[in-house]
Length: 291
Image (cartoon, rainbow, N blue to C red):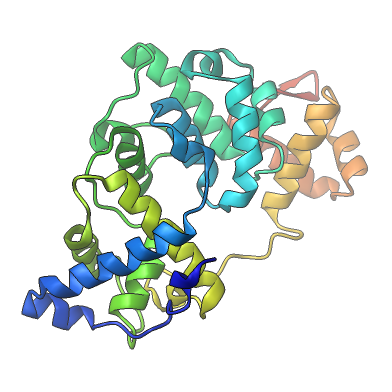
């Protein structure tokens, strides 16, 4: 990181004072800090080199709950194998999950396929640009829809994600606990570069990522903070193990899967039923296959 990172933890004016005084200079100072950091410490990400809506959607879904460093190579591999909405919509789930291996949260891969199918069927392969339309797609809430609109279409949307929340809590809520997003959103809107929201949000996210490495995580002071549960031994781990197993050995029985993975037989059936209900698996003559 460059020299702009040295003062990341410096105290900032309180949000209440900023809003009550209507002090535009505080916002300008904040913008200068973020931009100075970004000029010297910008992260090179392949999805930042394009405004292709399909590429942006793939990156945004991959980046949900996954660090950018882990996404980088998977994103490039995925885009090369499935370069557009049509190819993704036509691809069998088995192939998509193979490409997805290593990213976790396999529901996102299924959601991505469903997004592609809807875009092809409803919009003739052209991603809609409005936040409301994007929110109607599987696996996409307000923040992801707004992020896609900003990065794919350079729309001046207002949203919060984990790195953005970290930046604003650090700068404007230094002595506060239980900071609610409704308190942060007006600041996000006030600071937004409406001429180039794409670059501004990239700068905010890079700054937030650096903050996490430099100081105690400000997001712990958010009213929305939830400590992530242990992965080891969790249902999520077992679901992922089952899918990975069936990608390599399709057509196994529940007993075979349980014994090979070391999962209790009493646990395996609920997992298989859940995966089947979510359209990951199909059961044929008591044997399981990826859809």
